[in-house]
Length: 121
Image (cartoon, rainbow, N blue to C red; front, side):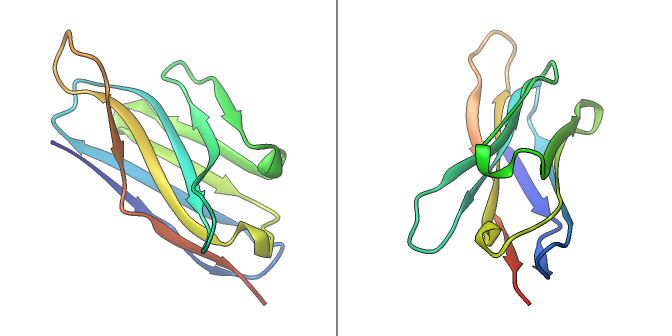
């Protein structure tokens, strides 16, 4: 089994910054893509940013230039550095990872429990 544990959420004023972390642990042979998604009340979960094992990134237009995704493969950890936060960035942020648990098998999709980010004055 694989566990993803997020940290770093909280309350921040508009224009502020936060850094989210997500550490994967358990029966991990290799982690492929990792990413961050978010879900605001009454809205569907949406992609924020993803990063491949090779370091290629993709992000939503709404966060381009403000959020940066990175990963430390040695630590099985993905980060989301968020700057110039806006009230509309308020949501529960979820970590996602595609994990190969056994050599020769296809990756399985895992999710963290979520961390709340609230941007408000």
